[in-house]
Length: 118
Image (tube, rainbow, N blue to C red; front, side, top):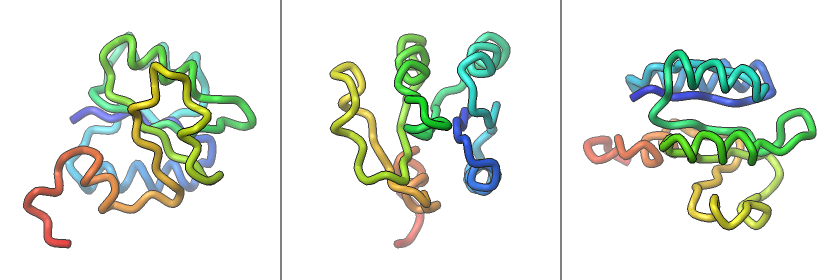
């Protein structure tokens, strides 16, 4: 599975990239800017994207909407509570994870946990 990770904290981004890699995912990009996402979408479109809800004070919702319009499955992570109440109607079904995100949460989110003991 190809994964795009959008996170503005470099250390957290590296840790999550490692977790996705450990789960057998190909991380096609770790970034924090909309322009970079557009480039990745053209070169190597992901199957799934995990977005930090707050990118240096800006909402990642427009990025999520652009990805979802292209058929990419999207989820959010946040360090500021649930966050799902601030999502627009077209993204209400997206999963919102609290930070720090655990490997178990990623397994479940990606549907890879069926053979993994709790």
